[in-house]
Amino acid sequence: MVGRTCAANSERTASLCASAGILVLCLLLAGCASTTTGPADITDDDTRDTRLALWLAKKAELIAHADAEFDLVLSGWFEQSEADDILDRNPNAKLLAGLTVTWILDDPAWQGLLVTVANGGDPDGPLQITDDMYLMFDSDDDGELDTHCSPPGWDDILAMDPRHTGWRQLVLSFYGVVGAQPQHDGVVIDMVDAYPFCEGAWSEGVPESLSADAWVNAQAELLEAVRDTVPAAKWVFANAGRDFPAGSPFPQHLNGYLLENALGEIFGLETVDELLESADRARTTTQSPHMVVYSVDTDDTDVIDPERFRLGLAASLLRDHTYFAFDSGPRDHGGVNGWWFADYYDIELGAPEGPAIVLPEGYVRDFATGRVVVALEGSIGVSFDEPYRDTADATVDTSFTVSQGDARIFLLEP
Image 1 (spheres, rainbow, N blue to C red):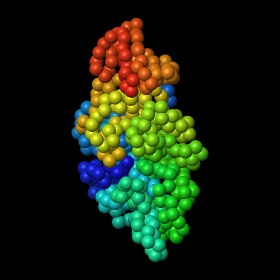
Image 2: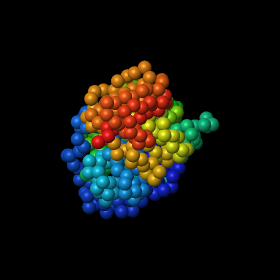
Image 3: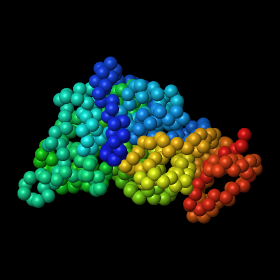
Image 4: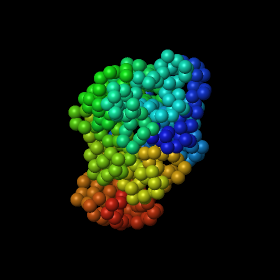
């Protein structure tokens, strides 16, 4: 997540905020001009290759890594020059930028980026973060607010009161500027939360304690306002870790989700079945183009589990309207060095021949020039009439076995 990454990685913080010093000139020259053009609605393509995403991109690292090419890049902000460098490799790449609607990182540089953008390039503009915006508790019952509310385990992320008028103005101005920039194909909102962790907290700006319903309703109002502020042709994405509960007011204001730590423990999507079910619910409750990012990581270990990597990539190919991301983990997203696997990413499957087939042992989906196999409850034998290549080890044959708990992508040999 944006705040988590900045806090744990000083290079990431610098990457997010290094542009602040030249942002005034950039915005004045650009005039924050809005654009009526945006990314095309992606439906079931005639061809289906891997669609690759980079969550919280370390932009300098990405640009320096000459072979790294992504279809969707998400970060806090893109200077036009950064966008040009990324688009030089993939002219069809989508760039989404954004930060928050309910929290700030306890870091001056991060806050500086938020405030500077919100004020159209002026860090000293009228929209500022003030003490009365913070959600806090009266921990000793003396009538004084003395303890910041933070997500469990993330003391450097400070919750803000989504009911506070000044905070709303700041956030909506930020997203208005981000959405108006022609280099941005849409916006992303991190840590949209349907499960209150600040219930009973309040802010000096809203002297009434926060209930679970108020937490959800205030966010829904902000999401609706963001959607109305961002040009209609541009995407609005959210990272909630998983799909929202049934009946949530959030999805109607969104075009896509990011499922962070997929196949990990944080958000409860620990199996491929759980991941697919969550992605299906997310896709069917959002607005067009209903995109979902399967974001798999190493749980911050930096130890690449090839089976987990393959399971996530293959699971993304079992569905349409999907992207796949892979990196270190929730505290260190966006890396390219060490996380770029051209043998897997440079895959051309051709047109899908139908939806994924559910087997007792797992899933199979056929394409014009490939097959994706996910073995969950037992091994799966695979046979072809012509030679195919296993992208995992480059073996070429007409028959293979995919072991339980693994996945494979097979490509027709030319």
